[in-house]
Length: 382
Ligand code: LLP
Image (cartoon, rainbow, N blue to C red; front, side, top):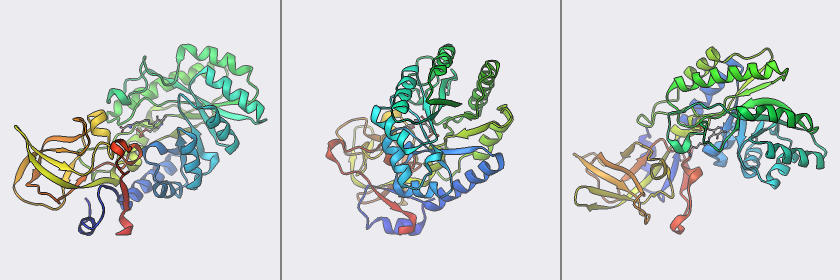
């Protein structure tokens, strides 16, 4: 729920903007910290979900690590106070300067996705006279049952190393004197709501663990990636961290001394953010009424890109219910937040909240149509 106090202030602010409820964020982080402490599992927050400096600072203050996918994300994480010894670097296409900078920054681990990438890391580590820790990102072939654009662990995925290549990877690693293999890494997709998917991932990981053990390869870290979904229909519902951690505990067989690492992104920040916008025009269509708002797909691309559902609320009107298509001002028909949804009778100037937008909202905003980037407002500033 967006507080009445906040709503009463929104009218004076320049829209659109992301509103972050820090109480929601902190309550999530408290739960995550408790689960992490009880289980001993280590959390690396996936910075890509929301890299707002203030959000990063709050998350780093809980002592979590950071999962980054570019040098700029690593740099932002370090500036926000994350400890380099808790930073991991993932991604299928790390560029030369990103690898060199990350080696120099002394990050904890590179999650490596191919033999050619290993060769480049070995070369730069050797040139810089450093030793680098890596984990192998493996494609476990587990269907995530989520949108195909955010499914990453199936046969045709560009991500991860196929199991049939692992023998060659181990062979290549024996010649690499500046690389230490410390673990295995997985990430099969995002917005996963079927818990059975994670159970299936655990089964595959257990099999792979045996494969490595049979070859006398010691692995200190098993990293299961991110992916825990949130309830977009109920924006006030917290993510099911306890269920998720319990599932891992029940189904993953860790070897003595092994650490389990997790990389949640969306579940950490999704429910704390709403995109706040004003209604510009109400326009009659042939079969619908358009509520044209001042936020567009440049501010929140998820509905246009993944047909994602975000709950939309009219925060300032309370009349009879009508059906609306809520659309933005961008010159694309995909610039539609929702079709045929029920809202109280809506007028020019009403304030609209698009909920559950804390993850992959601000982070994916663009300047298409040369629009300004959305602003940000934090609950403690009002
Ligand atoms: N670890 C790795 C290696 C990842 O690739 C990702 C997300 C995560 C962790 C965090 O996953 P999460 O817990 O947030 O599901 N833009 C899309 C989501 C893309 C996710 C990419 N990888 C969206 O708006 O739905």
